[in-house]
Length: 392
Image (cartoon, rainbow, N blue to C red; front, side, top):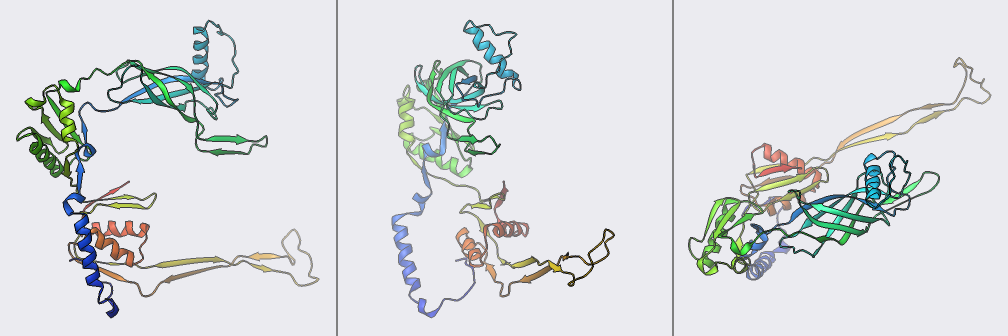
């Protein structure tokens, strides 16, 4: 078995192999290898037609406590307010408006699959102008349109804001969260339905959330075993097509209910994902490493500032404008020390080492996430890391 050769096992640990063997046997009984990688079909694919639809709208939030848009700086807010008042029979053309209680916002929502007219959905509110906060505001009736331009819902109601902002006359202020973002729970009423009849489909396409040839093949075999040979086929690594059998004609929902809970063994390519901004590293279990030696050196650079103050002697003449004479002078003094910790460890990784072996060995070296990123990239450059590195 591949391992890190870091140190020998003490004599007092002679019973450790027997204990480890018993532990592994218990794990094998409770969690078989095949089921550990199996997932339900409904968790790894998206069914054709069963999807959300994006809706967006533009509206006004009113009733703010002086935290709205400045109308002289936001022409779109002023024009929207004038247009709203005109629709209510109030003519404000040619009048300079100075309200601070109105804010222009975008309203977004997701129309779930099979939503029916009269149902309600949640909406999110975001300020467009220079409003400071939407706290306490109310969204006026706003149409929500889909990508096709049709109106599918209307949103209105009091805005709930998770953050806040407070300030004083001196200019100091404190902000928690984002007070210019809010939401309205069940704030939109569905006015138009998506015309989609799932039961009338002659075939259904399943889109894998993580496309993979092996996973798609396993998915096809699981469906054929349940519904009959030749019912499903693999179009590409990300798509499996299921032809509706005769006994399920007009009952596609029943067919999906019968197959969506079937277990499928999933697979994935060996990949290491690195987020250098946060120092986060995620590695798949299929990552393998060829024989390689890893050494970590701890180079410490220490810089100390110890300024010295030079005082003139007692009764010395006072310094003049020309710089002559005695005066107090601060003399900068910098000490730089460079040291490298002794006893650095070297980890030898045998060919075919697994993710568990690699992490255990690097942890034994005292390697942190930041150093681990550099080590992985260096091993990849040496051709010893059998995986792709994806940097975000």
